[in-house]
Image 1 (cartoon, rainbow, N blue to C red):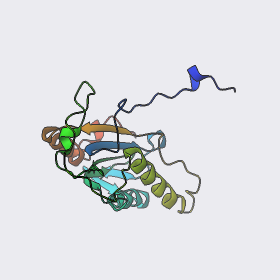
Image 2: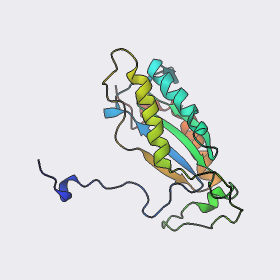
Image 3: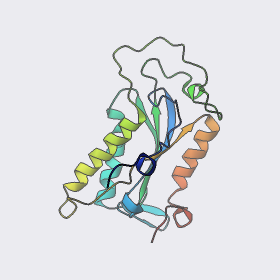
Image 4: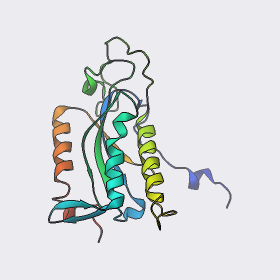
Length: 190
């Protein structure tokens, strides 16, 4: 089949003209391929990770070791997806005012940081962080006998920029309560 830009063009789901390497807090959702429950199951409102789920959990905890300007907040590995909050301290500045730098509802970027630059820290884009996480998980999972060629991840990921403390509190509560609400979750599959 020949390439047709109208059929084969993939639209980005990212906020247009937003720099995803700048400081900010991001609520991430990464789904498994075809939303297959690969990581375990929810029993009595508790997430029970299997060996593959443990890999996904442990690799998530290693994300902040990628760069000194990455911090992790609340996260949960569910049967067919991972939810988490990644905090990027602006590599060009310190982390003061991170939420004031997020775009407003109309897509305009808020106040710029005014702190001095942090030398030696190279900015990393949110997409690079997610890509590296997925790659590390995939590599480790493919080492398991019988899983060598199993597709692990859905293409892309979902992200929401957290703009204030109220949003952060709501996201944290959602993540913490995700196993409790599993039967009602839009990603729930039998």
